[in-house]
Image 1 (cartoon, rainbow, N blue to C red):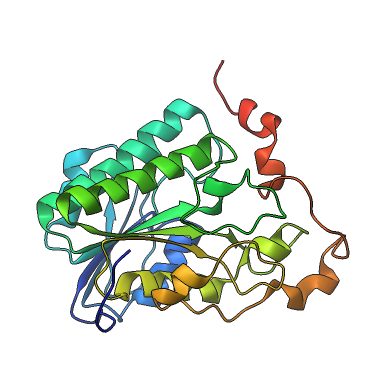
Image 2 (cartoon, rainbow, N blue to C red):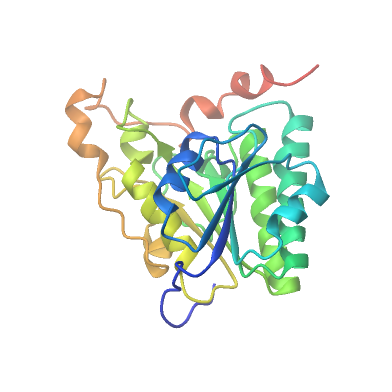
Length: 272
């Protein structure tokens, strides 16, 4: 990771947000409306957008449609894709090939920054007692996590080979408030989520970087340092909700992915 200079200004830039009809995408579009010069929100279904935001229906599997979306854009936040464990063939087609289409479209169009929505599930097989840094080898907890690792690798490739600036954001457990013992470690508040993506968009010159988008949780497992270096300083802590979480007095054991890391979670979603 290399970065220098001052944070980039967004107000005169054109940004595209894929997956804009999703939970995080819709909230990010609302946050960015009026903050960037031109904002294009796209999804496979028509995203509802605020006034002044362009709404475009596009399928990530359609390479030319993706390329057309990125023409003239300064940057793209790539949130689109299947958002949980699914059949490997579907995940590969949408999450990996779709990410390739975004990166290749960005290369062709001269896009300056790609922000890739990765996941904590890229490292979900690390034990709970092991602090994890993004520089450590991936240990995905399922096919979904493995496809996110593939997307990160493509971002690294496009940074190294083609000079594209790419930031992979490993999203934690995005919820209004933590709901279980695992989320006391992995919770990402809505406000900190927006802080993470704003930082990834506006960080000074970056080749390739990867950081965890997670709140400043007292019980957190993941290093915050790489995000801090890019300007992401989370403000919330899941511990403030611990009294409302069942079994909050227990210590979580086993893989950090919890139930996501069980064989059944993956096998039950594969076509046989």
